[in-house]
Length: 175
Image 1 (cartoon, rainbow, N blue to C red):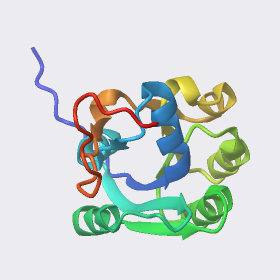
Image 2: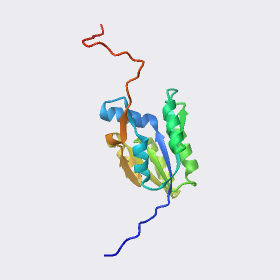
Image 3: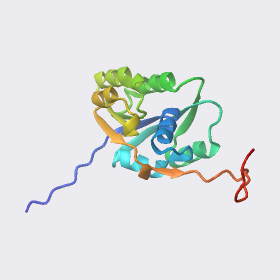
Image 4: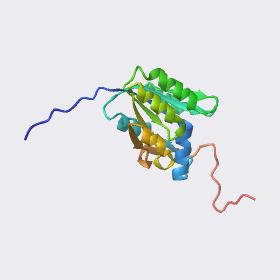
């Protein structure tokens, strides 16, 4: 039997996360607003040995976890970008700016608004992968992408209950 030499895939990858879309999708799929992506599980699986060039988490609104920002920066040199309205435009601009600097872009979102972006990036020679909750992902987005990777419950963790919330006594009913 012939011994095979492992193939070294030297792609540079950018991971762009539409935080609001992913958070809403997880809540919709699992009926749990405390469920969050475990990047320590998901990112290595998505990269599959390829090099991480950038990780940017786009999030609408001012309520952005400083723990998430700190974790993404310390572990992946990633950043969290607050968005005025939705992440669509800032994510699209960043993706087009990165297109000449990376081999692949992984977009964490199931939003059909990214279809034109996917088409554009592919026309520029960039491999485009979509990673999202399957049941909330637009079929047209999956069709346009080079690859689709579903987010499953195994890619998530549940946030602990906020310590500032007092536990209600047993049998407590709000009137």
